[in-house]
Length: 416
Ligand SMILES: Cc1cc2nc3c(=O)[nH]c(=O)nc-3n(C[C@H](O)[C@H](O)[C@H](O)COP(=O)(O)OP(=O)(O)OC[C@H]3O[C@@H](n4cnc5c(N)ncnc54)[C@H](O)[C@@H]3O)c2cc1C
Image (cartoon, rainbow, N blue to C red):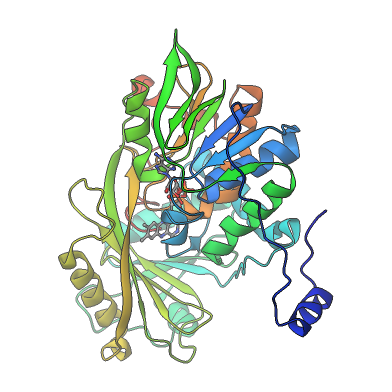
């Protein structure tokens, strides 16, 4: 039975002091065998399990998570959602996702707080102007709502921005009105709740130690709760994917680096869109609570410490204060890092591999939150049919052998 969130259930539960809400998902012990095992309880993994059950009728599925749901990058990101990528392949993937975002609260009957407040990508030099204008034209050819805006229009959208009196003046921007932000935890919880209802076992606090293979086929996973058998395993473990792949003898073209974000004390609404700048490297939006949500860059070296270097946030704050002098005296409340998985072409891997029954969904780097529903949807198709969906076919791991790369450094860079 679908758990309903309605005005009626809110009133009814408030009368009993909110003590009688049903648990959002069960907490089962793992079975000995599953038709499909998904490793990683972030948005992409939980979403994959949901679409496998809902659209492909598979019932015996487990999501295995070493910590808590959404405790990885899903719960650590700055939640920017957009689809204005350069190449057709990426535009199709991210736009597929954006369309799913637009209906996700209603599909899950759970408010993911998707807010289409628009995203500006600033241009600060001639190179930026050419690159962004080219991208806007490419987006239009793909039916994506992207437009070029001049500094005058930018000032109207964000009056507090200092566009002229700075080292890198703002020369223009791309603007995607349908882009925006969503509540990250809610995405994981919404998918988890609906997947659980469809019979998916969500197993938390269970670490996958090794992917067991024999004669070129996957056999299952060795976990902190024992061996679990399965002929199909999907690995969706962001920054730790290459570590897991190595246990099956597979080397993926991934680097794992810390990426940081920080939030300020809450203030009254001052900025009602999302602003990103690759060149000076700062991006900012304002949460519904009033905090500024600020994204920084990745460290220059591989690491698994979920923290990141202080020099990175210093540079980011310097850029933010130059672009918005009125933020100069604000206090920052929290800072954190997540381990992101970066490919050589800044595009994801959504793919089968040389081991039969083993699938990878990774390489989202600094920008995979926006892709959560779309990626989960096509990855479920890939696992269920043992064949890529036409949207994720270009994102096969083979492209690093064939050379058919989807280079999105301009659109992805370290910004989102
Ligand atoms: C600071 C920061 C800011 C970001 N900002 C944005 C943004 O604004 N917009 C955007 O689109 N993207 C952004 N991203 C990127 C985005 O967060 C990720 O690409 C996306 O959330 C990845 O989701 P996921 O479900 O694949 O991974 P995760 O949410 O990381 O889930 C993977 C899960 O796998 C689990 N796991 C790992 N190893 C094992 C194991 N051995 N056994 C069992 N479980 C395991 C982890 O515990 C984790 O919960 C940002 C990332 C960071 C860190």
